[in-house]
Image (cartoon, rainbow, N blue to C red; front, top):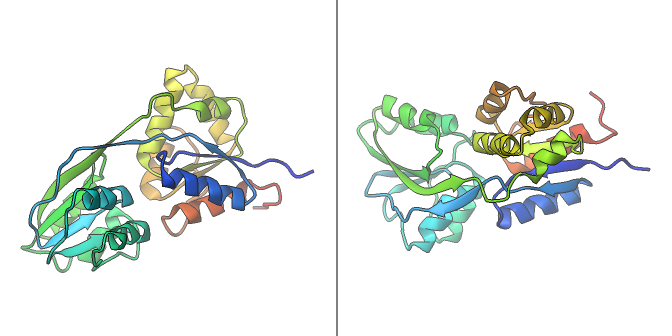
Length: 247
């Protein structure tokens, strides 16, 4: 009899969660969906700049809905999902870094933005790495908060599963998903038990910043994919968590 591989996923409750569940099922895992992020748009739009940097699919979609257009600016997207959303809006994407992270964006632009205005449009939980790195490269940087990320009401069922040893894997897709997971566990009075349960499972982090956040809270991270995409993360976690996996 094949052992069940239950994997918690924390993506926002929209098409991203649906596609994540579908992917995990296709990999033979049993998804445990528990959205840890809710999107609250601010209505803000980036002003004129030589470069506009988008760091999420959500940001691109919100700008498209608001009728914003990049015009003649150089449009930079953090990764393929963001770039696909931008192209779906009818925009031309000029640049995508090889590494889908704030550090990757800085590496991509550092040699060309001195003296240029760069507008970074993102959530209220963006990393300072991007702003500081671009400023150190000589850019005139502005930040536009397109949306706030909050903990959805009722989130945290997966913390109970973790505390009860009922998860074989988890997929953390940002530092905020780690923090919100722990907040939800704390609200239930089971934070320590949930962390113990995570450390008995295969914990996946989408990138090094997410790994660092998890480990700073005593969570052992077992899997970080080479490419910062959910597909790569899910495949790696399921591979490690499956009974047939051998280290």
